[in-house]
Image 1: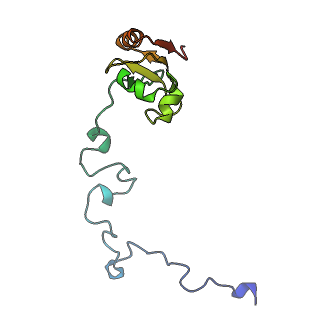
Image 2: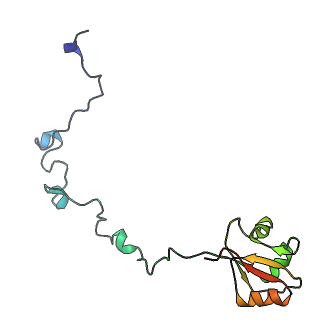
Image 3: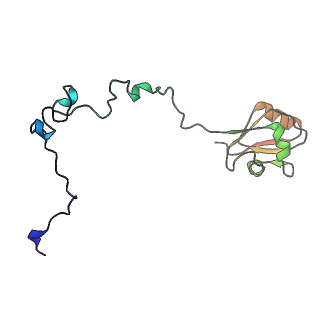
Length: 149
């Protein structure tokens, strides 16, 4: 084998199409660019985001209004009426609520005042409404706010 005899395998190299070389070549006259118009001219042509005169995507989408508060603290609402069912030894905490499947582990709890409370409970939560606090204390229980920042 000689280096001068090396060639590319047949079919691995595609012959470039020669445009504008007469009508007999099949790629003459307009050279495959159609008739007139912006795409037939020399130069860059249309931008990639052009949609043929249709209203562009960035104009069709609704604009965002307002802002997202990055410092917002998310709370999971738990009503007073649910606390009795989730109590363990007269106490309700985030862990006991999570073990009963009412909230996810590690979530921040806010106790709201919907429902009735008949037992005295020790309730630990991150926040509570005034009505919930009043109902817990009226039943003889205590409310301890944990993780206050």
